[in-house]
Image (cartoon, rainbow, N blue to C red; front, side, top):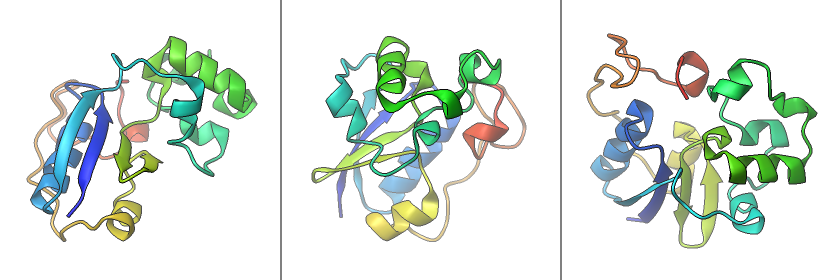
Length: 144
């Protein structure tokens, strides 16, 4: 199984469930605080691969949700500069396995990449917004 370096926002319910699922699938998860990490543009860029710039952004970030930041209108260098200055803008989690980098947690893509078991961990209410059902995707949450 893989060792996954997992950059998260501490306290994020989605990230917690994703880490539990990875561990339940036999992976070793090394969690790191995405917000406290010292990012360079080159290092951060490596996580986004061929994703369009708009998909580098956390759609639940307050400045994105308010419309202050329009991910579609931002070029790559500006996006990286913004994300280094304000890590809440970064789509999470960021994951690294054996020199391969990924942004976001698409279960099918993660399964194809390193493997996931068939059952997600027991769902718990989101510790941030306290919804009785989980916040399955950043787009469906009301928190960054």
